[in-house]
Amino acid sequence: MANATILEQKQKIVADLAESIKNASSGVLVNYQGITVADDTALRKQLREAGVEYSVIKNTLISKACDIVGYQGLKADLEGMTAIAISKDDAVVAAKILCDFAAKNEKFQVKSGFVDGEVVDKKGIEALAATPSKEQLISTLMGSVQAPYFKLVLTLRALIEKNGGEPADNAEQA
Image (cartoon, rainbow, N blue to C red; front, side):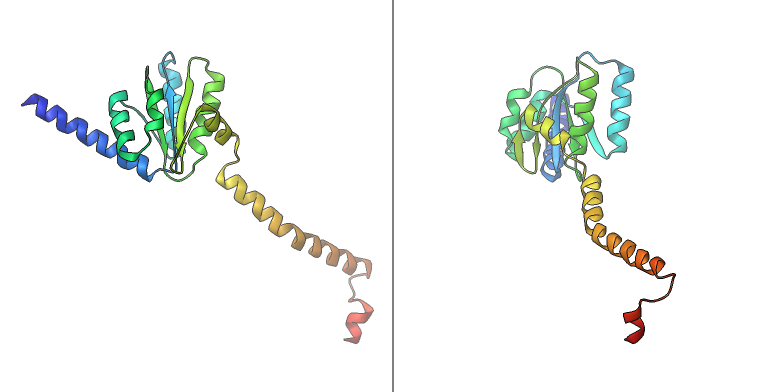
């Protein structure tokens, strides 16, 4: 009786994990062995605040979820103490936080992950982490769009000030 209950619980975990992976924009597998409880707590807080789900799940269960979703390429990295970070909205945020954390903690290792339906290796995750966030890209785009208008306003303002606040001669004739 207990075995059936445990089997049902594991099947639910696998199904939920597969659904999370399927609906995510990105995910990262890490080896968390050797980090302190304080570091782990700080990392979890930072990920949670960024909207990233971070879970320690048995490798066999992650493997079964990968089979369901079609990410068999991740299975090679399912050794040791593995955690998975899943980001639903921002494809960059999980990779950025985890790679920054790995740079400060030599025992913590980024293994691999997935982005928009594609499995990527450690180098791919590191490249993703180097990408500006969605907010930074939007800000850059908006600055690029606004720059010509800002220059026009400054130019018009300079002309008005040059004429002592009076309209230009050709504007009076119109």
